Image (tube, helix red, strand yellow):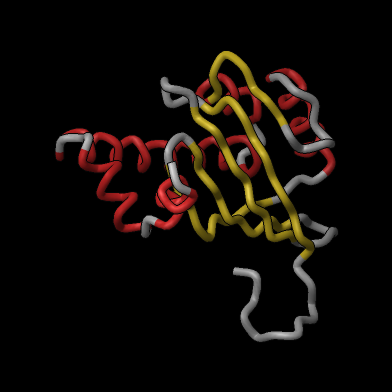
Length: 160
């Protein structure tokens, strides 16, 4: 096999890759997949709202999380109970904290939320949260990155 033929898959355009992916599914399958993506986005936002804004992490875990919960934030341990303990503490220390969803993007079994976090008497943050869903539509893994919302910027674009 030549180097060119081995590299060909890398050179396919987005449209060609999309057509190859879609060609193996019937229109009904694509609709189901789109429906699942929308459901996952909705569930990620509902989970986050219940846990963060409404300060009910136990209910959020019970309703939206699968059998396991893998955490990549270095300040929170793995597992459901560790998550609950951390966010119960955050609720007690920061009453009135609030997040606003700016964007939600879903692909495959992942949902990305772009959020504006408001922390009373502290700094606001721009956040990206990534959730992985299992085959049952439950959250099983989480990554996040946060950036302080600065009063100064070298551009006029803003973080949101």
